[in-house]
Image (cartoon, rainbow, N blue to C red):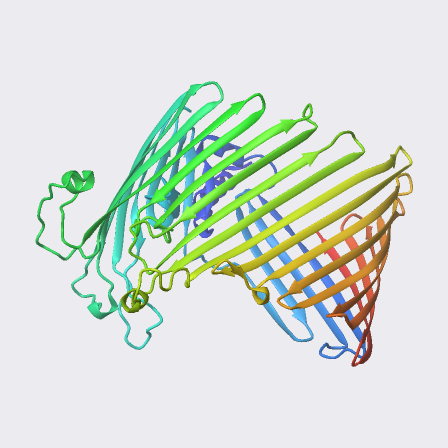
Length: 574
């Protein structure tokens, strides 16, 4: 390799990553980019297909053709420059590489990784969590026992107010910096992180106060810990504080004596500053192949941090999970229960309580039998507290429970698989699926029939596989029965199918036929008969021919309709 080529490759390795939206460059092994394989690789493909439609069904063109292709140029195994085009009898289009509006570079060396450009980092769900910023970041983890992460950059760019375009909200320029320090040991771990962000007011930027968009300032701090005091036992905990100045233009700060850490040490107590806290704790215990876990989370109403785009608040979660093997590990049962409520400060006009539970059980006594059962239950209880009911009531028992609603949704499923016979030449198996889903609304402890629904779905299938010939036969029967309000719907029908691999597995072909009949409230609504044929053939490793044809006939009270749809295609890849 001559010197000019080496110079060219070095220049390309340093400059071309700037043309892509995100590049991960390992500086420790950057020499591996040179002298191994081709520096320039080109690949792509070409696809052509036609679709024919005929019959009494309207709304579709009788003939449609498509031609599309793609070409990708790969440089040094790092940079991709994609091109594509598509042509149809309805129009044409193409695309080519363009300079991205967001650039990022992630060079790494040994245990140090830098993030440069438009990047995102995460410290904690309560401080910095995936918010994109334009700036620099650094992850330092030379050892597995400790790590340091830092960031600095612009979280939001300034957007001027435009009275002619109310759809675009103006914003102040928002800058932020933060850090995270973590220590990890086999039996304990400790982590501390913070984010400091604030908006900057440009004297030349005008945003009317009537929009209620004010320059903010935020400091969020989080501490996380993990402890394993005994074998199989683990405790986790996280505590977070966030102080949010709703309008940093208030120039009359005063000290506070309420004992809040952020108020007394990091920030002044200003009349438009709000302080929030969040806590999350968990416990997992493993013993004799059994697992039990407990979780708790509480987030103050209105909890905010400028390091996230959106965050749920004003909630309390309690979760319990359990897993237990049985019958010498031939069966396993696991379950979890979760409870959630809001209106923690009792200030909302309504309060909501949610209860979620799920059970999963499997049983496999031998290689022939496999059984799985699942059940889930979701309940939502809402209590609305309009003030006029309290103002106008004449006794304390009036209007009691009149605005209490409960929504219940539960589902259960059972799957049974039985292997009739299996050897080197053939295998038989039967599969049975049953699913039930029920939903209802309860008001004043009364189940309203018009607001409930129930869905029953079942299917059974038999499969025969001839292993040496690579041919399979399938027969199935499906049934669906649904009740919605005071109406019921029934759909049922069989399905038959065959698939085979031919010509030394270069060709696949299949045939499928299905029939189903539907009724509503005992009256026939329609019948559908389908015939489907498909085939695909690959030759010379890069060429593929495929065909798919469907004949469908529908019988309805309005009459009979039938149509045929056929698709033929060719594809080439290089």
